[in-house]
Length: 125
Figure 1 (cartoon, rainbow, N blue to C red):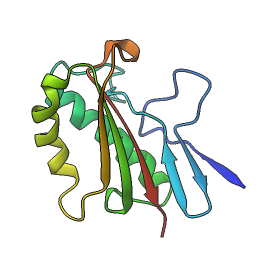
Figure 2 (figure 1 turned 90 degrees about the vertical axis):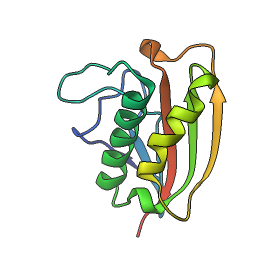
Figure 3 (figure 1 turned 120 degrees about the vertical axis):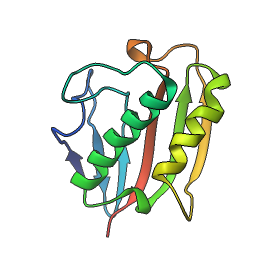
C-alpha cells in the first residue's frame, strides 16, 4: 500500500500530485522545482536553482525517513544542457560518495520557467 509524503519544508504541489510516495521501503519524489519555501520564489542562477531543488528533495526524503545518502536514482531536467557543468558542481555538494544512478535531460520548458527540476528514488531504512 502506498503512503503519501507531505512536508511544509518543501514547496506544495502545484497540481494534482504528491510531493512523494512511499511504497514498501522505497520513496519516490515528484520533480522538485527550485522554489525557496520561505519566499515562494525561485533564485536566478542555475547554481542557486540546483541547490534549491536539491534542498527540497532532501526535505521530502527526510520526511519519508530517508536521506540523500539513500538515493539510488536521480533524474535532472535542464532547460538548457549548457548548464550541465554548473549544475553538476552543485550536485556534487549533495552527493559525495556512492553516487546514485542519474539521467540528465534537456527539456523544452519547465513549470514556472525554472532552469532545473530534480526528482529522486531513495531507500528507507
